[in-house]
Image (cartoon, rainbow, N blue to C red; front, side, top):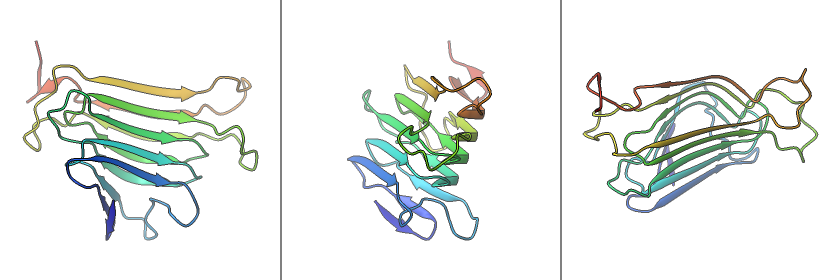
Length: 170
């Protein structure tokens, strides 16, 4: 993938992996502007946000593809690693949002991992029809947390899923 201004662009016709996992490679802009992860031309996307505050104020454009085996996965595993994010699913077959603490890293307190995230079907915006089948999984890894701990997910919304031009698909 390549970075141009505040946009990461995945190569066309192949899988794309973006790892925002160390202090030197964050996917958050330094000036507060929105960062765009553009995987529209890729066959799949795996976005790993493995650092506190690594992926904030991001727009993820999942692949637009005719493949029935396409996926768009965002994995977040430290405090506030995914915050203020919008994920455009387009016609990707499998959408995964994984929000779980990295229990091996005890240097961070247990705070919310994923916060204020919108998963938007946004069909037809770029000539992409809804797929015949689309699976969306949101995994909030709260297992083993004490009842007083902060949940790993907060304010996760889905909109425009299974809709086309404002109408429910039969």
